[in-house]
Length: 593
Image 1 (cartoon, rainbow, N blue to C red):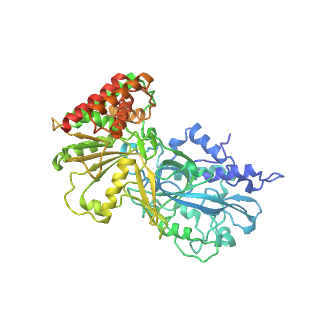
Image 2: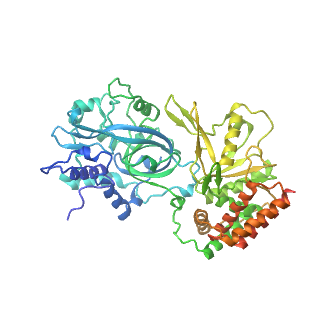
Image 3: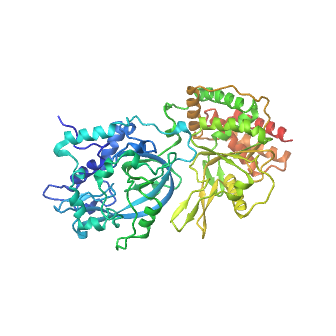
């Protein structure tokens, strides 16, 4: 009994071809014109979703990174995890055409026409979106995806299929080379409706069988960007700085040359894409399935559990003890650190980002930061999916590119340090800052940092105008005194009583803490009518006792109340939680006196 006539892993284009032929009724008396499927799926998406999620094929699909690029096959199915760093607009391509045998063929999910195209009149011009994606900035090593694939599977399995399939072999692999090269349209046009970039069309057999070393000779060993081509998806589904997993067909050519062509089908974007993102450095992924990643998608091996209060409290206590040890037995700082790690922007009211809780630990010197800062950096890298450190020196402020800038010469968005995905953690070390003068770049960078910490927004520079992009970044500042450059929501004088910390958490504890931090920060929250009256009375009394208190202080208290409730696995504010808020504020204010 034979298997399916396609292999979604090794020959995804064969599956696309067969579903296309079935959808248009190729071979039947009535053939549906392919224009009916412009911007629509004809059954390929359902087939791949079934393979990936119903047949557990997702774990078998190789992850695209600098290591796997050495052995994954051209035109095979891969997945890529990354942040959308730039949105390059749309491009047109020949989605369907008649071959010399007058049969309809499709170029969807491909870079090149696999059959000769005879006449431009027998073509359907479709549209797809281009996204420039990069590895998730600041991603911790434990959060990187793993794959069950054996790197030796591809060549043998592909050859085996070619021998066994016989008549079912994918015609895309069997088109005579001279036919492709002799096609008048192929000489002038790639499948995307644009001019050929080399004197002759790409030899697909050579490209798919080229050695791994020649394929990756130009690839950065630590950073692999990817040009993702999106089909049939609403623009609202994918946004700048979102983190996605893209699953689709890989095309990567180490030898494709860049040649300008005056052909009427040429356009400036195509030239820019090849010059500034050459195929020998930036692989192309023709996306079939994509999904936005949540925090839990970065937790390898962590069980999905219901956040019941008793379970949450146990994990909370263990994590609190660990943070206390890391912070030199400073329990007050550990409490605020825990709340800080659970903070996130839940909503926005005008310019106010509700839910953020930036933290400024003061009383730190260069020497103490070298101990506790390093220790916290290691802790965060073991607990958080994405974390970065920003050394705030005078030279750094005067030279760094914190916000992204648009380069109209290349039509690209040049990334900035603060172009980070939602939920990132950023440590700012201000202890290295010395007196001196800020130049125009330094002044602009201080404004950008203040805007981020106060409003959770980053201004993107488009030269002629600026666009404020919403952010959700946890900020932790180390400084000697109160930071004026990065004014935090909470200022806590750091008072450690121990220098050494011998506690090394076991793997099971780390997994539990990661799950805890990812889960409880998203718990819903409410305040009952009775507690609402208690809170209102306490705020009025506090205002009468201290006229310096304002709306920002009260907003901070309410944020802390929500975070304390969530940290204990509760969704409703209780009197006990509110008392904990007031006690933490009392202890903090005592230190500030």
